[in-house]
Image (cartoon, rainbow, N blue to C red; front, side):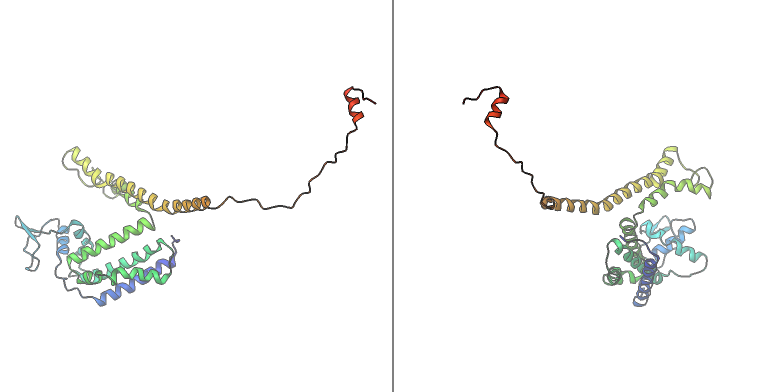
Length: 289
């Protein structure tokens, strides 16, 4: 993993901008009228879950219940359209900008794919090819280009996956997300003072405790736990592999021998013949003539 440099971020942004521009002019949002999630996001901003009026005839997947029409799309596909619905509410746009939204998603995916390539050392040209391949060399180019509710939802899913891989393998800071879930309710009291961190409490104490644990404190602890596990797993493998390789080389190589030094001459003792008489005299014996 390389160090984070401003030049690398700017180059990744330039590649993403060119990719988004090319995606915009090479696709046509033929399914832009199928704006289920955008319509439901507008309804949510009004404080309702379902639309009171009958939807157009081409929106056949709206489910009528109790005089209102509800969407069968997942909640996440609706929530990601809240910023676009806010632009509509402020009068900045009039229709669902599916074509522009698809181009922004494509550019964002290319940006994170390029940053994800920093998981190992490769050339810049190869990084560019790896970042463009998942968008322009797969069905993503065709499917996301249709610009329907389903296609935009899949584009957000792809962006979330590549971003999660980047913040797990390269930046490795999923712990910040979990920590925010854990401390977010307490921090929200700074701008929303009241009896609880998420508004006035409803139902009994058990229900309130389960909501706080399930939506904030417990979820944050779970994310921190999984993030710590992932960080430890992906950051320790290269070191363990290197240690094993060194150990294998050490087992296969013969023990190193000391380099021969200069030969030192060996000192030999000169032994003189012993005189028999002198030896006997020392032992207190007489010598026969």
